[in-house]
Amino acid sequence: MKTSPPPVAPDTGAALKWWNLGSTLACQEGGLIRWQHHHRRDGTLPAFHPLSLADGVEMTWMAPPDHPWHRGLWFAWKYINGLNFWNEDRATGVFDGRVQIQSHQATPADDHSANLALTLRYMDGRDVALMTEDRRLFMSPLDAREDYFINWTSSFTAATPVELEREIPPHLPNGTRYGGYAGLAYRPTPQATDWVLTDSEGRRDLAIHGQRARWLDISFRNRLTNRTSGITLLDHPGNPGSPTPWYVLLETEKNVIKGGAALLYEQGLRLNAGDGLVLRYRILVHHGAADVDRIEPHWRALAAL
Image (cartoon, rainbow, N blue to C red; front, side):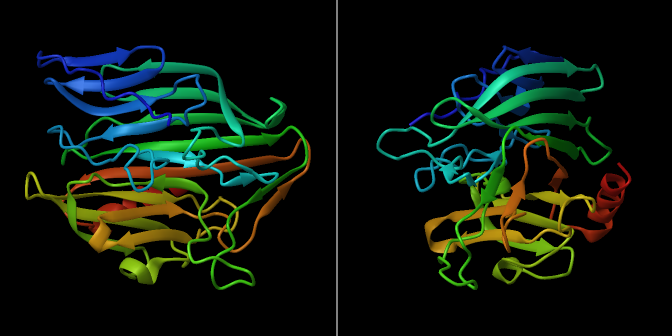
């Protein structure tokens, strides 16, 4: 099973340090990893892990045993022309389709922000390109509360006619219990407990599943620190079908929780050769429980982009 490498070994110095190792970019300060992005060229999906608070407390889980294809914070299509790009075969560790990183450029700054540009190709089993993606990520500096955000823009272009699909959700004919997922997703740390999921419409927990909202927040208490924090996923109003439906996986007894923007929840999407698709999101990493008065300004800022 292919997984991204563990975080780089922290330096003991207090100054801001950037680890730009070709396959990863990490922001470290005071010997603590604030965030790390993995972009290896071996077919492993690009992903953030860890996303941490300013004090180094991790917020993400990479490749948990129950769903080893969950990769902290990541984006994955489920099916492109019937090929599975979400999860690899458990026995062989091989995907039906392959994501090829053609290029990446990291531009870190002294204010702790960074820009990361990736060019991706979505390949079929014969190494023929189905679609390309130009991904632009901006990681912000800390604000006064020591929170930060990631602006995420993915611009896709179909190289050939493509059908973007998912497992059919249960409320539709021939649906499956777990159907509907594809897109931006977040898996919290195994130390998360006392979870509270909230959306922009005031719904909680599983009541959010399959429903449309401008944002989804996943907050929790950390078993190690006994402090509450969370991550908010915000949907840009210009995204197709916005506000997006949200996918929620919540199995308390198994310590399984995942949330994601489910663009394809109600129906798949067809792109003709040369067609483009642009998706924009913001990811807010915050201290404390979900606070509408703090989240809404982030949504307005995203909407203005």
